[in-house]
Image (cartoon, rainbow, N blue to C red; front, top):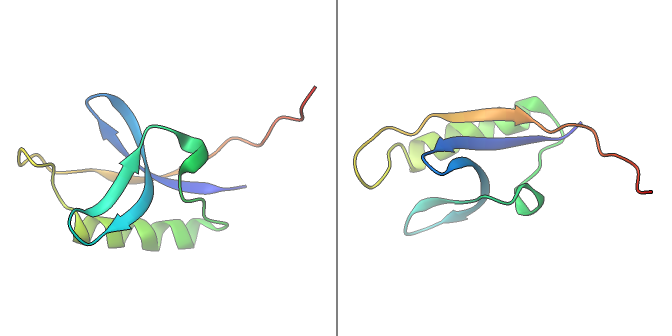
Length: 77
């Protein structure tokens, strides 16, 4: 199983895909470029780190960072 860190955005689910000195964390809508963690504990540490570096949106609303388990990969046909 793989775990990712997400935030619910007004445009939908956004995935943690990197760290930024300017913004704290960078997110994207594509789960294939998201940072994937092997264990839930690693994902929780990243979630906590993202919450301290980037606690709110630019308009002041708080960001609810969450750990999300990705579904298992389906074999190609």
